[in-house]
Image 1 (spheres, one colour):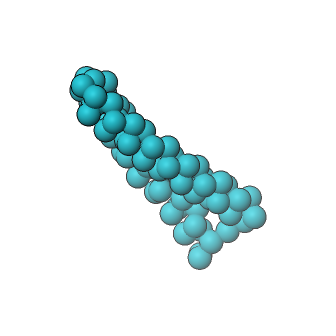
Image 2: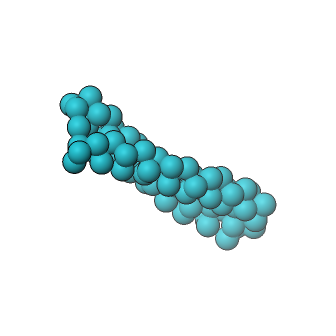
Image 3: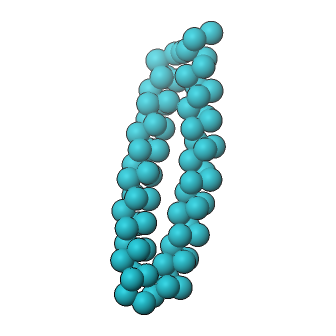
Length: 72
């Protein structure tokens, strides 16, 4: 893997970790909102979080491709 690809893979991995952290925080907020009666808002938030989860797999796949090139 070139230095450029390694740096790119590392940066993407950090972005995924940030995305996971933000997603966890938003999930906690959605739970809090739901407990206070705003179920529609909480449901919309959960739908958005599902999109983050779906996109995370695509990002993880790209990281694996970049890292696989290192071993070749």
